[in-house]
Image 1: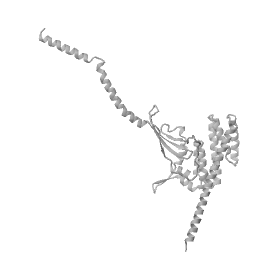
Image 2 (image 1 turned 90 degrees about the vertical axis):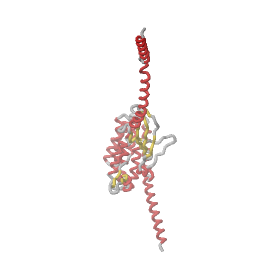
Image 3 (image 1 turned 90 degrees about the horizontal axis):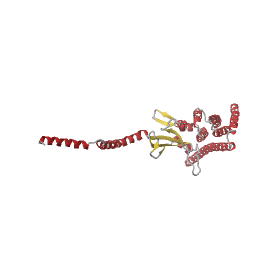
Image 4 (image 1 turned 180 degrees about the horizontal axis):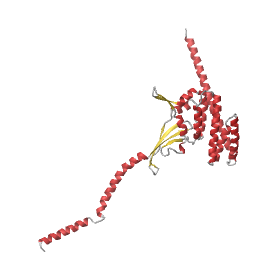
Length: 320
């Protein structure tokens, strides 16, 4: 064999050996693993960004027990709704709500051992328009503020209202708290608008007119429950409406209609006597709270007069 032929054979063998190194299956193995690893590394920050952008759920809750608020936040995997972090809470109670308890306009609801504090949603970024957020029908009114353009400051509206109508306030806020504790948020606009239209601080007149409004609220809520088949809750609300004092002819006619509704509930609900008994207890508790609020106001005024008298006597005795 000549030298030229030998070189050709050697080149052919080299080409044959090189082709064996890149057989199918081996060629793609390492690049695929490398690409998969790069994709996995790139996916981590992308997932983190998606979690921060779309996975943070924020919301706010209101407690009718003592008129406090809190904000919450937690992380969940978008679209799967898998929670991946604990819930963080932040107190966001407003000045007005703090004043309502410190001034004894409402009484904090106490709980028995093991009973948790009640919280009602008024905002949730996951379900912003849900019926679970009905407390917003109260908190929206509590957020009202008067803006002073000269000082560029805002004052909570209801703080000014409480000072302008101190006697009416001690009747109004226990009633609002009672409605909230019974989840009567959908009726709040009627009650709050009634207070907004108050012109004079006349407790007896205010109480009579407030009774008319709240009685209709209990009846309307009960009718809605009755239509939806919630007969037990309807019975509770009808019984509460029946206990509200009313003396006008129109209210007497409404009472006759209410008696018919109560009778319909009686035929559909067991333990109706217990329901009526609980309604009486709740109404007595509300009346006691209003009486205490008015008594606290009277005692406060008496203390103010006493302190002024003592100060005047001290000033008189200090004169030569």
